[in-house]
Length: 529
Image 1 (cartoon, one colour):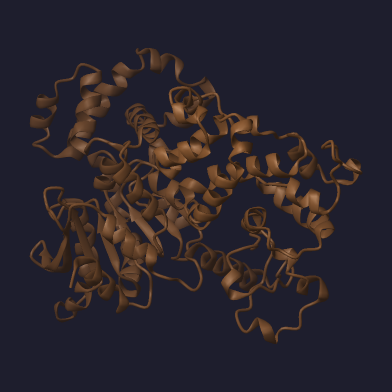
Image 2 (image 1 turned 180 degrees about the horizontal axis):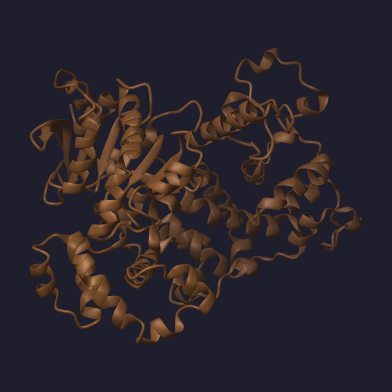
């Protein structure tokens, strides 16, 4: 049995989806962020401090190293140009609350900049796209960057232990940043004094994690088996189990260690710190792990389930539903859910007597993805006037990249010269999109400069598509002359049909794919080109 099959079989024994416990190895792999020691060394040398001296004085204890560094850094930072000019006086009062603040602010800025430098490697990009599609119930992380939030934008984030204690947590579709986040510099757990405060609040965190560990499998990514801080967290949790029950944990804890020198991955039984049983995976990449997680089917997506729990929680608290009854087929439950008003009943929709307005193809429930698919496949049988007057105004409120000309055309609202019939009767959102042209989808930044060095941009759609990966194709095609795109509309349509499912379900592709559909819609349906 190959490794991927072993992992698939392993997860079949659990009813719940996994939780990820993500460490700094993930940030190093995808963002190139240095390890903690190298990060401290960088900032020590930035102010002329001797790295070896600090390391020796702290006996190699990194939190203690950071504790020694903050004083020297704060004293010298205020005299730097950054210290003088970075913040206004009002913002300084909010940001600089103690001696540690200057170093934490500098580290946070450094980490935020790392997001501009995602490692340019096709293999890693493919891994990231699989990661973003993983069907998981939540994430716990000690990382300070926001890489995970960009992959799972529909998850709710809790920063630090205080955020977890004071926020409304439902244990599903949530990211717990237990060591803080670069978006809130003072939340970083960095120094020995930070860790002392952290440990005092640990009982609540441990109880929260204990619930997760009992209910779901947990996959550790980006940590070493010898990581002291992870061992400390696990020992707090394991202390709640009698020794005779520790075997219960073994199948639940999957510890994945990245070993690039290996040719293939393997899974075996192991023990952390002589006591904690785990399934130990050594792998040359995370690809097969993410493939299994992305192929796992969930009846209801985690982020939607959290929304439902939150609404039901609010309903129990207030006894006020504050909204409407919304009927939707279970396969379509993720589409068309408003975060402001819904009550959910889960059952046989065929047994619900629907009103005629909803029976007419469920227009109330149409979402952007439905409109995108209609422009590409043209197989809908809609009341086009209702789509223009009732559906488009709602969808245009929250989405910039909406193809509108296909629907205006079918509603017979476009003259042969491209002008609009009864323009004043259209909603503001639709009117604003009439002003958007293909040039509107061109940025003036890196992509534009890059497009000038790509000869296939001047050759044609198929040439560009065959020469590069699909993600790069999507980024470059807005810079192609419209005449070339119009010439190759048949090829473009084939490409759109081939990739629509992948693109609309992949966070890193969907936005640029919708741009391309808007360009296609403009050329084909607007009568303006």
